[in-house]
Amino acid sequence: MLTFGGMQWRIAGWLSGIPFTTLHTSFARWTRLGMWRRLGQRLALDWRLACGDEVLPSAVVVDSRSLRSSPSAWVRGFDGGKLVKGLKLFVVCDKHGSLLDLELHPANTDDRAGILPALPRLAALGFQGDLLGDSGFKGAPFAEAALEHDIHVSVSPGGTRDGRFLPNGIRWVVERLFAWLSRYRRLNIVYDRAPDLFAGHVWIAMISIISRRIVAQTQVLKRIYSRTDSYLHGKDKNDRQRFRCRTTECRRTFNILTGTPMARAQKPKKWGRYLSYNSTPERPQDHGTEVVVSVAPLEWGLGLRS
Image 1 (spheres, rainbow, N blue to C red):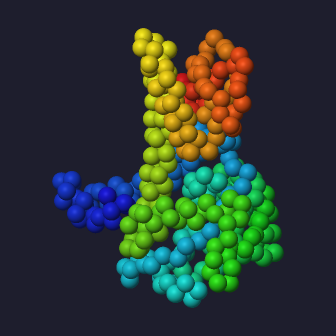
Image 2 (cartoon, rainbow, N blue to C red):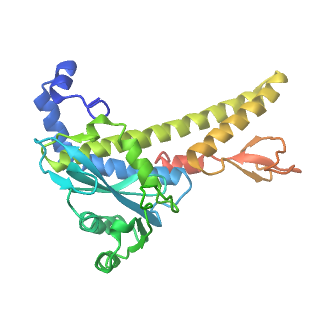
Image 3 (spheres, helix red, strand yellow):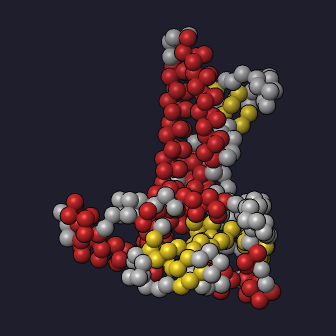
């Protein structure tokens, strides 16, 4: 509730029965040790593996957002374009909208100068690819500084003169990331007295988002496998038709979550679980093949293999 509901530390200590100074001290210690950042990056990379992608992305998206801050915050600046007095949050995400790195600066900081300290950390993470951004990141000096870390800057206009947003490629996912983070009340107005404390709340919000994705995907697969076993070992003939309908529903849910097909058509093998399906307009009638569902990629992505 501290991050999602914006609860005060004193109220959290009163509800838990633990002195709020002890809670805040532990949170600050874990934040300065980088625990939240490492956990968030690990979950982001695990989610990529679960979706069937490479561990490191070939392109990342960068953007900034101006946030209001209270007088007790560690720094305050004025963004003349958005008329916001506070600070500016710079984020770097992949095509799934998973946060990979962030920077915090006063609201009057230029976009290129604000994201520049994050480039060495991206290179240390192993990223080498394209950096997608809006027109605020254009310029030869910034492109040359990014090229020193084997990062190529690709700039596209973010919108029209009348304020209409222009989705270009995968660059729109960073706007969706800001929408996800805005659901957490602690991140809308900055009250923290140190930048690493506010960054810890941002990473906790991202950990919550990615964890729910992984849990939802795992529950869908468990439903599919449990219904597969009930179909294969069931004695009621009417269960087979109901199983086909429910399997189609689970397959569609899985495709929405991951953006990739759940299963592929193959010749029957001894080690797989086989599901028969009816012909659809998108999938022609199959002759002598069945669908094989493999759980190995998901287990590898979540780090569950022994």
